[in-house]
Image (tube, rainbow, N blue to C red):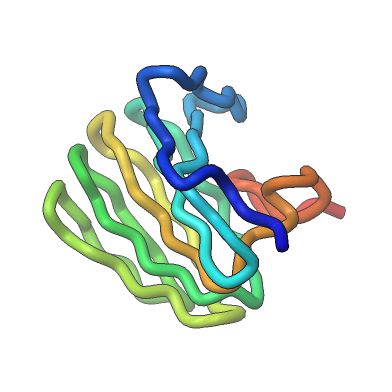
Length: 123
């Protein structure tokens, strides 16, 4: 089984720099679920992309404009977002912020670098 350690202490982890003002830390995963902490600088863009995973996102802080299948919504700290499987979605960071993304099943493509990113589908 592919899984993380039971306790993930973020003060002991470096941010994984993804470029474009976006960085992340993996907070825990197994084959069924994955939680990722994502930091955005103001103006950073999560380009429109899609994946077969169900996604739930909690906005810890900041302000984002999310778009899901053509529907736009401003999201602030304390708000949540549900993204159905295969929905085309993306976000623009309007005020520097932090998101917690939860995926089911695990994003194998994040772990091995083979799939979609925060900047759109890879070819």
